[in-house]
Image 1 (tube, rainbow, N blue to C red):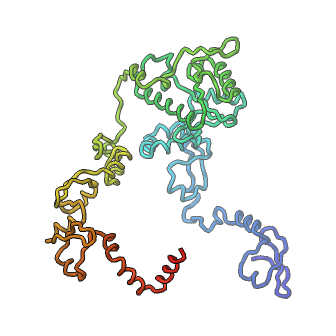
Image 2: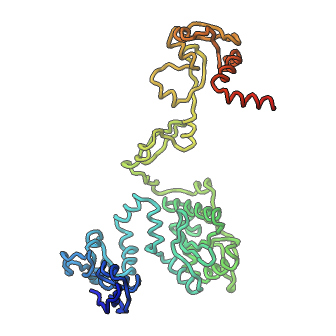
Length: 445
């Protein structure tokens, strides 16, 4: 309970439960609560001291502290007082972020759990994992990281842009460096032809990445190749300096085409990386040892023919079941909606166009070019002539009996022309005020 100093004229002087400062409060307000403070700050400090750990109202006293201890998954250090919520949900426990990062990069990325997660959730999960700083840094990337630190250049590994992650993003200069492995990206100096599917995929990815940054961000990526990074680090150093000083503009963006002569860069444009080759030229030097394995899972994908153009398409099963029409593209889907076919009228034999979807909705095989022919087919009609223009008109017996005037018209226009005077009189009787106002307006005009 709060210590009361004095009480006078409906006021109470008391000590703050947190800092012991004397405050005063109206007696009625004071009696409503048990604890009293100077302000929200004191209240917050008191809560942080008195509602943590075993003092918390949510603390599970049924689980003893001895059962809340686990060993760090990476370094085997003991971790005490883990919350029951974490104990029930988590498989792995870490004493620090460094231990977690080491375990993720060196062990977890090689497990089946991680591979299945990437396979199920796709590239977005992998990109988030890379951006979080848990990615495995390659040897050549480590060398470039150390070089950038030596040059006092701030950078970020695995920075995400759209669907791409880059090796080194130079934050201050808005430039990008990619570290190209000789095997994975098929260095021209080592390989005369492409024998592995993984190399072919990497070349295509490099080409699309290069074009993506050029078209969307106006950034030309600097590609540093493994042979140059490991055997000629001074060349890479001078090339990075040149790249930054010229604001990302170079005569060539591949380290394989540069030579260092007396400490100065010299361009020797001898090699053209496979990522710059045309598709036809690339196919001429492609001789895969093993055919490319399909990544499609038969249990999750379905193959069908496009309903419009007939092309064979493979799609995820849940997407196929979700759609009513099955097409290879949006264009084919739109064309299918607008697709019309030629049919003959069941009454007069005239050919006309009708939407395929409309024809499918019909319960009968009969189609008609107009409403009149539909009515004529359903009942015995009598041939008549329009009372205004003399055009041929067909009416059923029931409609003839209902018509008391004995006049028939082919359209609303003919009816209004033939009955102009009677319509004016009818308007005058039904709406005299409106008719008078219209008459005055016509006179003034």
